[in-house]
Amino acid sequence: MHVLVLWLMTFQEVTKPKQQSATITYGEDREIKLLVQGRSGNLVLRPAESTEGLAEVVFQQGSGYVSYDRQEQLLTWVSHKKRSLNHTSRAVERLAPTMKMDLPRHCELDLDLNLTDLGYGSLRFEDLDVKKMRFDVNYGDVDLTFPTENKSIIRDQVLIHLMIGDLEINQLGHLKAADIYINTGIGEVNVDLGPKIWIDTKLKFDHDIGSAEITLPEGTYVVVTGTSRNLEKYGFVQDGKVWKSKSHTSEFPMLTLDLHGPVGDLEIIWKTY
Image 1 (cartoon, rainbow, N blue to C red):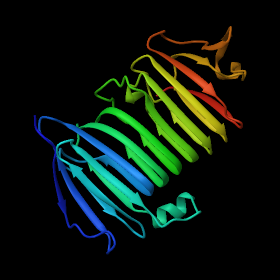
Image 2: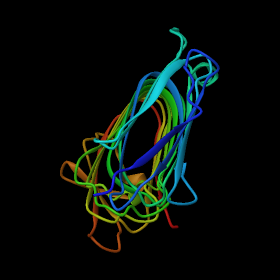
Image 3: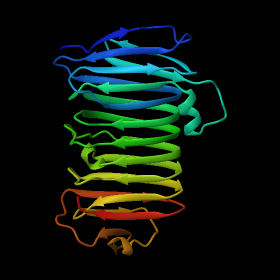
Image 4: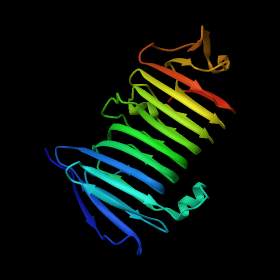
């Protein structure tokens, strides 16, 4: 079993001018565990050009650290900014530490992100093998993109939580997760499932206040539960307590959409890719 090899470069105390970087490679064991936690930060996650990746942190007016546990194959980033009552994404973006991480292509990723404030989060899961995913943020402006088919089928629940802010998810169907829970509070939410559903998927979508837009691939068999809204104008017919897509090319795989909220505008769009 090969371990992830990580070299820390240009390390400085984070209380001084504020940059740290880490080079990431892997051998036969491709798993990378990425733990992000703390009060405030910005995060850009994207694929590297090769099987060698790089994480670069600029701490700005904040503090924190990056560490790697070789035995656990765990990369940890803890970040903070100065304590403030201003949770707007613009304020966090300006003051909080920023990590830009190019992950080695085709690595196996176990992601656990838990930040109070995320000024901006841009996570692009391309040519990666996502094994687990937990994304928990109270405030932020978040874009998640899944442009390529995931190599794994995720049986554990995928959690995406954003209490206040804007959330955009693109081509979510490529994640190939059997159980997804999107929990949002106040803000604008756009979820695009992309060109196809690869496996039977249960998507629980719970949004409180604000506009929500869900884009579905044309021809998918979709069953909607949990809502008292009339969905006829979106191409569904009622069957008891559930709504079913009026026309679909096949009943498999099936998307079960457990829809709660929002108090505000809801738009369901069928799209041909």
